[in-house]
Amino acid sequence: MNDNHGQLSAVLDQTLEVVDRVSRARRADLKLEEYGEVIYVGHGVARVKGLPGVGSEEIVRFPNDLLGMALNLDPDEVGVILLDEGPGLAAGAQARRTHRVLDVPVGEALLGRVVDAVGRPLDNAGQVRTTERAPIEAPAPAIIDRSPVTVPLATGIKVVDALIPIGRGQRELILGDRQTGKTGIVVDCMINQKDKDVICIYCAIGQRSSSVAKVIADLRDHGATPYCIVVFAPGDAPPGQLFIAPYAAMAMGEYFMHQGRDALVIFDDLSQHARAYRELSLLLRRPPGRESFPGDIFYIHSRLLERSTHLRPELGGGSLTALPIIETEEQNLAAYIPTNLISITDGQIYLTPRLFQQGVLPPVDVGTSVSRVGGKTQLPAYRAVAGDLKLSYSQFEELEVFSRFGTRLDEHTRQLLARGRAVREALKQPLYDPLPAAEQIAILLAAASGLFDDLPAETIVKASAKIREMLPAEMPRIYDLVESGEMLGDADRQELIGIAGKAVGVEWKPSKP
Ligand code: ATP
Ligand code: MG
Image: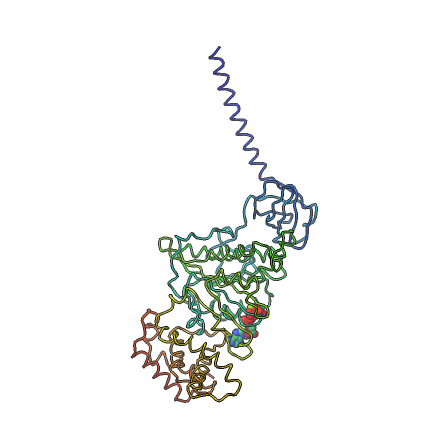
């Protein structure tokens, strides 16, 4: 009797196990076929009923392969932000779970390409041929995986490299009112990465197509296309695309960082990103906070920028530098989004309309701009000039205000003003003309040593051009000397000033018509 009982229970156990396995398999099958129904479509968002298992940030597929991303998970419905708009997306349409979070293609194949926020090509160069993909959200590297920023990211812009130096792996905010040359700075920086082995990713968020087309053309004209990727979420795209674009760009950059390479990612600009997220949040009926932005807007930006870093050597030593751009209104740095970003980043470059109107281009306000980590990475040769330059330049800006009243000035003040004007003139730089470090140092040394004092502005411009022209022939070793990280000796300084003296003395003739 006992024996029979034992056999019976063993058979029962086996049967139960089989039933369980079958039902689990069926459930898995069913999972692939989880459908819901769209109950509302608004501008950029949809609400879906009947997807109880959907996860946060999971991709939802609508008819005609239109995509959305689940953001609000309420008990009886799901708020989805739309990544596409098109026919077939209306109340009553079917919504399908995909069981995956959004990922984008990554890898070498993207170089030279223009893609949208989901990684689909926008240029006419066909499919992006890569097998590798990466989720757009990735956890930021842990503190112990990071190492100090040690290598400079040369922008080729004198005022930045000398006074507000940026390091590889740093996050430096660029902010200013509209039309103050913000995009100009970052395009210059990308052009200057030629032959420097830095992959550049330009993420345009909510820009007009014409301005992005101009950036793409400028990059092409200066030979920067082969190492650049453009991620473009146009202003007229669904706000969901604007929201995910910077995360996608970051994922593309991270791929290169994990390969042990250096990458630079630019967000132009995060004000538009914040606005898109505010729009989506309000449409999804999340409670508004300060300036109507949702409460988690700080977290949205910090979790994005935290991903930029310099990895320690054991992890390949790659780096990902981030240059987010913010547009201020009426020079108000104390608005919500600018203050948030200032506190998240390692410093800021502030461009003012006042300097722009005076023709001081790029219009960097040296007094308000700062770089908190880049100073340690700056090539030592800059120290021969940069240290005093910032102080005397700020002093000059204060004095300049007084001198406008036409007061009589003593000789010392007059000299300070003349020096300041000369330095300001020497720091001016046209677009798309980045300078190697050695040439920057030669020009700034001439200005700092007083050679340019009392010269008219146009003579300073000509003399600077002449110094650049003479340098390769007169002192070829200076290029290697500066790049190798040596300090300038007294003899080197004298030699450089000598060359500058000749440049100021001789009449300047353009070498090309
Ligand atoms: P927006 O707010 O529209 O994005 P922005 O702040 O990005 O503008 P840019 O588009 O870079 O500004 O520049 C505005 C104008 O200023 C452009 O016409 C550009 O050619 C000019 N400009 C910017 N920097 C310089 C410079 N260093 N030298 C000469 N012109 C410049
Ligand atoms: Mg711009």
